[in-house]
Amino acid sequence: MYGMYIGGVLFPVTPGKMTIKIKNQNKTITLINEGEVNLVKTPGLSEITIPELLLPSIQDYPFATYKGGEFKSAKYYLNKLKAWKKKKKPVAFKLSRTTPDDKDLLWDTDFDVTIEDYEIIEDVEKYGLDICINLTMKEYHTWGSKKLVIKGKKGSSKKTATKKKTRKSKSVSKNYTVKKGDTLMKIAKKQLNDSSKWKKIYSLNKKTIESVARKRGRKSSSNGHWIYPGTKLKLPGGEGSWGKILSM
Image (cartoon, rainbow, N blue to C red; front, side, top):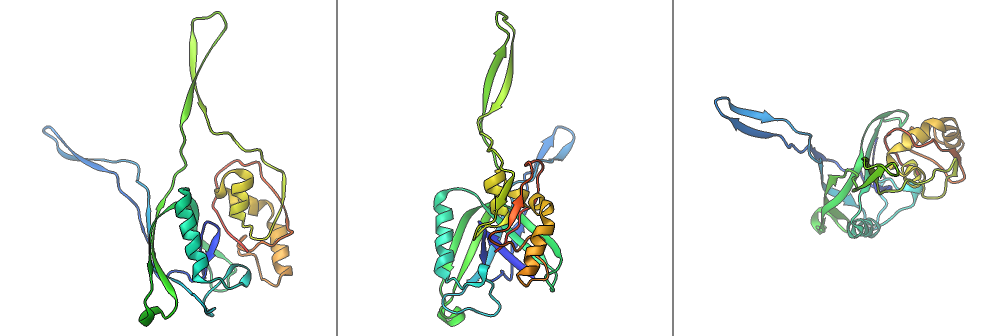
């Protein structure tokens, strides 16, 4: 089974096709008497292209999935895309893959992206009253400027230069109670300042999350895919780097 999330929002119909292009930054240079050589560089930002992503307008199809089980029209998702584009900030992108019985997580496509372009398609003969979009996103890496601070002993002419990051770290709470609309990714972003640390939260609270999922009638939480309001979670110290995941 597949599930696609952008900015914590579960899109109802998983795309039938997705292309991820790993950008190349290598350069070919010519050396005297040596001919051409390849200068290998770090890969560029990946580009994600999703053609004909279906957004149901008025009908809740059996193959569509909505977070919380409540139908949302195409307008809801179009407004989300418009808002993300206007904010000029990255959002989390995740495509989760689980076994057909929804018990085991296979692998994820999971990183922050920027919404580059999206094309809205209305074709009555092909889609009826539904809407399709052609969506293009680009991988996003966090970066920030650094401030140069000069330090030295009093009365000494010798000074040492150190670099100081201007970005302030956020204090981390020890516990968190899940609210409606929360996902492990959102919690990690808000509480740990890094949405990629969802797996650390899941690992620390696996027993609790799985127990609540079973009480809600599910065989499992699908590795933290489903979490519920009122669940009390312990939060890690924020060390390390982990993947993202979403929930109800």
